[in-house]
Length: 338
Image (cartoon, rainbow, N blue to C red; front, side, top):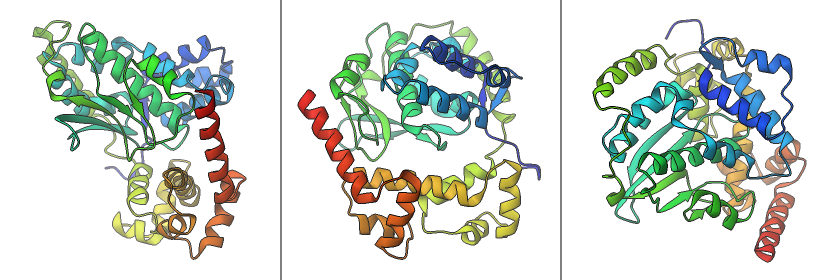
């Protein structure tokens, strides 16, 4: 990687599809942001973050708006990756292509295919590295995967379940009606469970003869992407080792804490801000899964429960105990109304 840090980025065609979807949902996108989203073949992740933040604040009365955006995405919105998927023979082959070339769409998230330990099949896991509007963007991504797979197999694809790590943002039944399959929440990961028999479905092909040529083009595009920005690598390390501080992270990356600060500053990011955003995200996921406040605080590296509670209140405006009560109240409300 060159000494000059390059920012994570998103394919411009994909970004344009999100922009148009936001406008269809009545989001008023300022001219300055719209212009920033149309400069070149790739869009800086910071601008994509800004778009999603605006989308989230403008659609608070429609908690499934992001999922609807993902369902509406088409193969053409994924640029060359979409064409490459269409040229595969089977759904299983398409999943392998997606795991390899997804960074062309956006290099702050990836997919992986792992065996499903609870059933005969596989799980397509979605692993986001971004920290802004995570729940909305994850729902859009998996909505796109499910509905695009169903379209490419001429309606034959039937996922076992769609799984989210976060809590439902609306009635579970509403999710299932849109996705056409069971949906579960509060899992250890985001993903789509797929029975082994589904992998052999043949696809509506754009032309098998194009596949080799498209792979060459995609290989060139993939090779041109930056090989992990410093901030992306820092995020991965913090998620795996939330107790680590700046110096320990710097050691792992082969640089001093001061040098790490400078590298992150090149991406307009501070280590403290990035770490706190990630710790808050990890804390929310752990509290929603039912872990005790003291256990969560200790796992995240706080000296005691009070220190964790003060930090969580600064991040969210609530103590961890208040947050848990609010979450339980939301769940009760969903259960009653369902």
